[in-house]
Length: 274
Image (cartoon, rainbow, N blue to C red):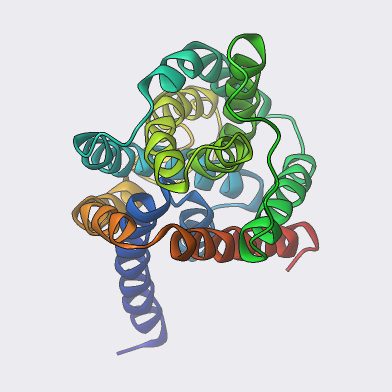
C-alpha cells in the first residue's frame, strides 16, 4: 500500500472513531462535539487539497451540519427522561436563531481568534469551577426575560463562528444559576438543534459563490464530511445519554470540567498557531 492510500485509510479510521466519540459527547454533555469535529475535518480537507482560505469555514459549516442529527438524537433521549427545561428552550429559540444567522454572515469577514479568546476565558473559568468543586452561583435561578434571551443571542453568534452546537456555553450558563448539571446537560442538548440547523443553512448560503471548494460541497458544507461522521455519531449518542444519567452529580461535573478544559486548550493552541 503506497503512502497516499495508507494516509487515506488512517484518516478514514480517525473519522469513524471521532464520529463515535462525537455521539458519546453529545449524549453525556449535551454538546454537539464541534470542538472535536472541526480539527478532524481540517485534516480531511487538508488531505483533499482544499486551500487554506476556504478550509476553516468549510470545517465550521460542515461541523454544524454534522451536529444536526446528533443533537436531535441526544435531545430526544434526554427529553424522554423528562430532564430538559422546555421553558428555557422556548425563551432561547428566536434570539438564538437570530444570533446564528448573524454569526454565519460574520464568518465571511470576522477573524475567529477574537471569538476563540472569549470561549477560552469562559470555558476555562467554568472548568476551574467544576474541577475545583467551587460553588460559584450568580443567582438562585436563571434571569427570565431580556437577560435570558440576550444569552441565547450571544450563544448563537459565538457558536456559529466556532462551529459548535452551543451546549458548552449553555451548560455553563445554567450551572451558574443553580440548575443541576443533569438538567443543564439535557436542556443544552436542545440548544444544539436551535443552532445547528440554521447555522448549517447559513454556511451553505455563505459559501455558494466561493471558489476552490471540494467536490460534493454545498457552499461551506461538505457532504463527504457529513457522510463520514454522522451515521456513527447518531448510533453512539444514546449510549452517551445513558452514561450521563448513570453518573453521580460530582462525577458528571468532573467529566464536564475536564472536557471544557481540553476544549479550551484546543482553541488556545489554534490561537497560538499550533
